[in-house]
Each structure stands twice: as structure tokens, then as C-alpha cells.
Amino acid sequence: MSRDGVGTAGFTLIDDAPLRDRNTLRVDARAAWLAEVHDAAAIPDLLAHPALHGKPMLLLGEGSNVLFTGDYEGAIVSIATRGVEVLEDDGSSTRIRVAAGEHWDDFVRWTLGEGQPGLENLILIPGSVGAAPMQNIGAYGVEAGEFIESVEAFDMHEHRFVHFDNAHCEFGYRDSVFKRHPDRWLITAITFRLPHAWAPRIDYAGVQDELKRMGIERPAPIHVADAVVSLRTRKLPDPKQIGNAGSFFKNPLVPAAQAETLRAEHPQLPCWPVPNDLAKLSAAWLIEASGFKGAREGDAGISNRHALVLVNHGHASGAQLWALAQRVCADVRARFGVTLEPEPRVIGAGA
Ligand SMILES: Cc1cc2nc3c(=O)[nH]c(=O)nc-3n(C[C@H](O)[C@H](O)[C@H](O)COP(=O)(O)OP(=O)(O)OC[C@H]3O[C@@H](n4cnc5c(N)ncnc54)[C@H](O)[C@@H]3O)c2cc1C
Image (cartoon, rainbow, N blue to C red; front, side, top):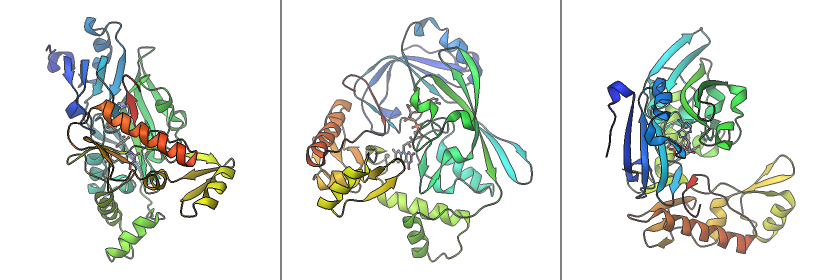
């Protein structure tokens, strides 16, 4: 193992690095090199390091949206910069610059503690602030991209620092320009603009029901946060207790006519209209109807709480988890003619 001093170099470099504690599916993979960046200004020096010369590079946050199906033969670059800075409060909104290595949930709680609402529906999403723009994280009817003013990044191809305003991030549903070009831009910091004007975003039926259960009629931001925490804690397995990457399968989009035919045969199948004559189907329903909810093959399984969640009961390898996920997809395709896609990034051999 070799290390460069953090104080002098601004990064740490480790060879043959274990990844089990760096992915929430708790897969026991290794990386040929792992670089942890503590000072964004040191990125050019890191990339010039002889150990990394000619190596493929993978960017990693807290590993809550990845599946390693084997060891990674290149260099993993993880940003561990810290810092939250209020840039400006113009009376109608607050601009806050956050380093990419901050933990997302800590940041959300910090904003609420400061009396600044907006992000409460996104509480308890695992992962780093730097990864939030990647798939434009979203939950309970709110997306992070709505509050992102700009993103600072290092262009790994052109070796220079770059700046994206909101429009250039091309945010969509679980999508962005960053997601479409993985490993191209190492996100180093994000500036959020949080308006002072606030109205609760509680259209999502589950949140309303939860607030009712809590006996809250006119919710403040903290009540919405509490309702979301309570819903998430009940529905989603905690990665600290059982390895998982949240929802492993995306809700599939199919032509509206195909959705109609399916609904004629299976009236309980949840289905939502989408523009361009498409329909979104519930992947959870399709998986449960295929008999996979709670299924287990060795230590690889599908959660018995939520059919979208692939779980590691202990020592499943990434290849075993991926094999089970592929079996789920093949079965759903054979039964319903619908192709499921993974939401997390699948990395390594066979992916
Ligand atoms: C229990 C659970 C619940 C979840 N719930 C939700 C949810 O409600 N909504 C939701 O949207 N997601 C959810 N997720 C997924 C996950 O939390 C998010 O995608 C999160 O943003 C991933 O952050 P991370 O730091 O772990 O990224 P990683 O998993 O490390 O990386 C994810 C992707 O981002 C890239 N990346 C990471 N950091 C950077 C960076 N600094 N610069 C450039 N690229 C980078 C990686 O290359 C990879 O492609 C959930 C996951 C779990 C385990």
C-alpha cells in the first residue's frame, strides 16, 4: 500500500484498495488504485501522478448507486472535499455553495436547522452532495435539480475546471448531462439557490397520509421532513443493516398501446401516462407478480419489504447479485414482454 500525504498533496493514493466499505451493497471488490481528493485544486497534480498514467478512471461518491460485479482494474477517484458556505442572502433566496464530498442528508438537515426550507422532501437520500446532480436525485415529488444554480467540475478529458449553470446540466427525470457522460466531469462543488417563499410539496399521497397520521394539518418544513423520514424508514431497508442500493430497477416506459393491452390482462398493474404516447409501469408490481419479492439465492436477494430493492444478505458477490437481477429481468420479460433496466451504475466484468 502506498500513500501520499494529504497535507502536502491534497489527495491520498492507495493501491489494491478494498471497496466493501465504499459501496452500500457491501460487495467485496477491489480497485487497482483508489485516489481520495481532499482539495479540489490538487486534481491536476493527482492526474499527473505516474501511478495513474494511462489507467481508466472511475468517479465514485459514497457508492450508494453502484454495483461492482468484479474488481476494478483502473483508478477510482473519490472526492472527499468538505465545506458549506452561504454566499448570499438577497432577501428572497439564499445561495449556498457546498463541497462535493459533503454527505447529502447532513446538508439537507443543516439547511432545515438554519431555517431554510426547500430540500425537506429529499431528506435521508444516501450519498454525497457531488453525486446529487448525476441522476438529479428525487423523492416524493421533488428533484434536487430544481434548487441547483450551478455545478463546478473538473473536465477529465480536457484537464480543466469547468462551470455548468442549471440549463447546461440538462436535468431530467433521474437524468442529467453528467449521467449521460459518466466519468467525464468530476463534480467538485455545487451552488444551491433556496427561495425563502415556501409552500409544502405534499401532492404525493403517501406524504399526505403520513402527515394525517401525525395529526398535522398545516405542516411546517420540519413536519414534511419528519413525514418523509418516517415513510422512508418504514419502506426502504437501511443499508447499514442490510446491503442495498435503494431501488435497483427503474419503472419501465412502454408504448401506451402496450400498456393498455397489459392492463386489460392485469387490471391491478399500476400505470401512469407519460407524454409522447408512452406509459410508465410499476416495476415493483411486475417483479412482485413474477414471484421475486422476498426471493433469495444464496446471499443475493430481493427485499421482502420492497420488490425494487436488491439486497445482499451477507457475502453475496457482485456477480451473484447481478445474476439475480438479470434473472428478474428475464422472467419479467418472458411473462409481460417488458424490459426492466437497472437504476444504479453496474461496473465491471459482465456488466
Ligand atoms: C436506501 C437507498 C435509498 C435511495 N433512495 C433514493 C431516492 O429516493 N432518490 C434517488 O434519486 N436516489 C436514491 N438512492 C440512490 C442514491 O442515494 C443516489 O443516487 C445518490 O445520489 C448516490 O450518491 P453516491 O455519493 O453514493 O454516488 P455513487 O453511488 O458513488 O455514484 C453514483 C454515480 O455518480 C457518479 N459520481 C459520484 N460522485 C461523483 C462526482 N463527485 N462527480 C462525478 N460523478 C460522480 C458515479 O460515477 C456514479 O456514476 C438511494 C440509495 C439507497 C441505498
